[in-house]
Length: 80
Image 1 (cartoon, rainbow, N blue to C red):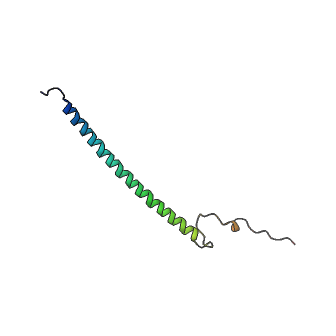
Image 2 (image 1 turned 135 degrees about the vertical axis):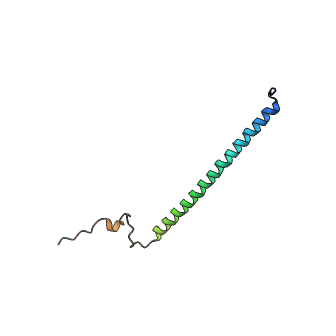
Image 3 (image 1 turned 30 degrees about the horizontal axis):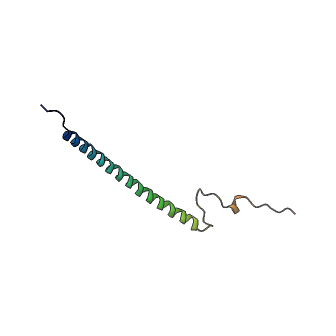
């Protein structure tokens, strides 16, 4: 039979609980770091794409892109 719970037993249980919590926090931190890395890669890819689009030849057509303002409205024919 086990005797009454001592203060030492309570401290051991608290330390074990803290160890479990710290291990879980380490897991969560690792997941957050992986998310940050993925977000950094995504942001860099989007920035590169934006740079390519803004420095591209303005005469080059991009599928799905809106027409430039000069092409948006057909020119009117002058009436004599």
